[in-house]
Amino acid sequence: MFEQRDGMLRNILTRAVPGLAAQAAHEVLDTVLGRAGLQTTDLRAWILHAGGRDVLLAVEREVGLDPQALRHSAAMLREYGNLSSAFVYFVLQAALVDDAPDGWWWLSSFGAGFSCHGALLRVSR
Image 1 (cartoon, one colour):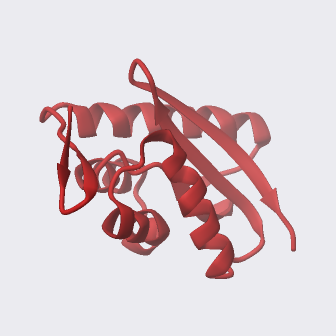
Image 2 (cartoon, one colour; image 1 turned 60 degrees about the horizontal axis):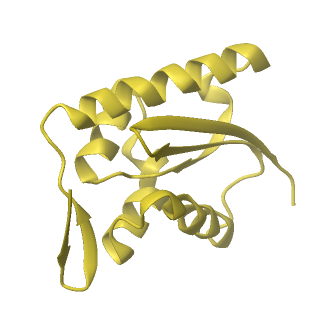
């Protein structure tokens, strides 16, 4: 469910959703990194669809990330609110503008029917 507050779209989640989202995101991440022979420490930037503040915090805990890792997602969430699946493009732009380091980047988004998708990006500018 969504509500609009101060001109921003806000996602209202049941208590179980952030944990379930974090588990799904972690599973997709582990699968893709395993196939590529990489580990989370090989990732230089995180482009994550927030799904809400509680989802970001749950992913951070589940994956064992430093809060700075999700700074671009958190900043876009504060600035624009939840923009649904298009949110990751705003986060990607923020990471590019912020000059996030080249290398492996992880892009992950939540979609319809409570799905989770991920892509390993190789960034070289």
